[in-house]
Length: 236
Image (cartoon, rainbow, N blue to C red; front, side, top):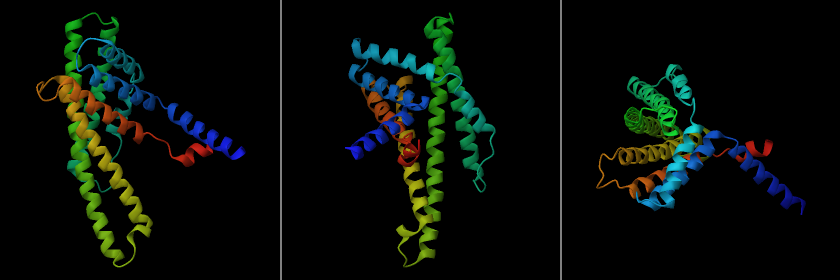
């Protein structure tokens, strides 16, 4: 009985730790938003209403979030990072920070505080192009970093020779980083499709249903990436 209670407490602690993150709540709302977009397929109804209302609610979670990427933009890079990857990373930070800043003006427009509807819609479109650009930069960064990781793992394999590489701590860390970056690459690629769909750059191919499906899966990946480690949850 006590062991079952301990397991329940640990699981609740894990959930509390996760849901205490504003970012986690935002991504859960994002999954609801794009899931509703998939169901509505751009047609009026309950699903579309949920899509629109959740989209508006998410903007509150992102207030002043542009400061995070602004800080990353001026922060020093990891030693040994090639210049092209540094430039791509900084471009991603600049574009994402701009997107999040402009998104606040879009929120002001949708709530009726900012009265110029045409300008608000134009700013919203510019912000989405910034997000598209940041997703492209992220994709290129992840491809470059995966290439660097692959090269360092091959070098380590040669050094280990006949030894079991999976028992080597350094190799396991690199393998975990490689898996994390592969998942981030998949997510960034999906976000490009979502941005194209929201901007209606290819309306015949990237329909609201396709946008919703890619956005939903991308959101689930984000939710997974934000999961705290079980050890951290237990200590909490």
